[in-house]
Image 1: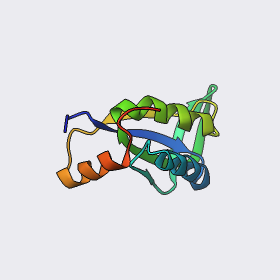
Image 2: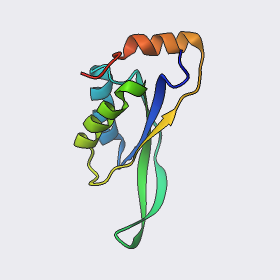
Image 3: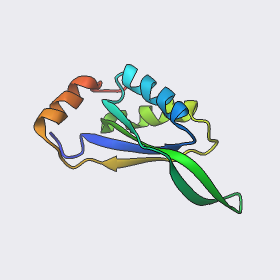
Image 4: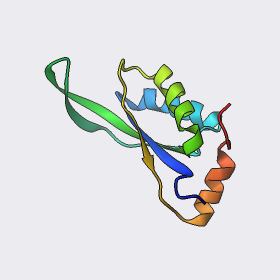
Length: 111
């Protein structure tokens, strides 16, 4: 495994339902091996010069680095926010059997 073959694409969604729709599409199209949707959290940020507090869910999309741009493109198109967060975080290693499984679950290049 090259150290940066796999990445997490991190995002937040306003609710579990919208996150699940994106997750199911990404996994179904083999653009992600797995998507973890974390329980509600509180996000505090400034938006349009106003302090905002929102309940959101965090999403970690496990994918190949070569697929990250395609993952973001698809997820952004289905995202309910006008300016969603998408961050690509490197995965520097992991257990060989899991990495082998993730390779089998994902495409080796974007469609």
